[in-house]
Length: 279
Image (cartoon, rainbow, N blue to C red):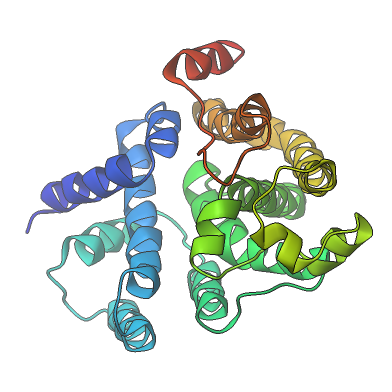
């Protein structure tokens, strides 16, 4: 398989998996855009190894073994590894967040309830901030030493904000899978129990719980925005676009009157255009 064919397959995975990210990162130059699609394909394939498998632990172990083979330099013909090899050769990639994402997948295998907001945000780091950290070497190649810590924190904040947004959008879907990411301490703070959440009622207390997490996410989006100035002009707009489009999901859920049990909040094509016009 040629490298270009491998990238085409990765692009299809990204287009199918997240039109929001696909549209945002289409603003990049072709080489950088292709590298992003390869990283996305890694994340999606790893996620599917857990969520779409009848034997998730074995599938996860098999995927990580294939990644170990990749890191050892072994020849592989699968599109993901062919494309990722090219990324590894062109950018100074950091392997740690790739393994940390796998840690988040392990949490999903063994954990379905969260006690505190801090614990939920730790999961958000593993599940989403890691993706931002994977992309940093592509989006900000060879940053000045003084910028690295701030860029890293911005990527972490944006990832947690996005994961909190996912949690708020998917409350109903997660209940169907017997998963509750809304932390127990936030429920209790507003007089709710797990049973109340399972009742799937948009009560004033539920709205308060939802807004507590939404406002935390918005604070993290704002924190991440302060670091966008550190990105080169070529990659700044795609990052800003991804953040804007994702944050827009929160307002879409509010427009749905907080019914995240029977409706899926999404940003319409018209609204996406309006948000992107702000850039």
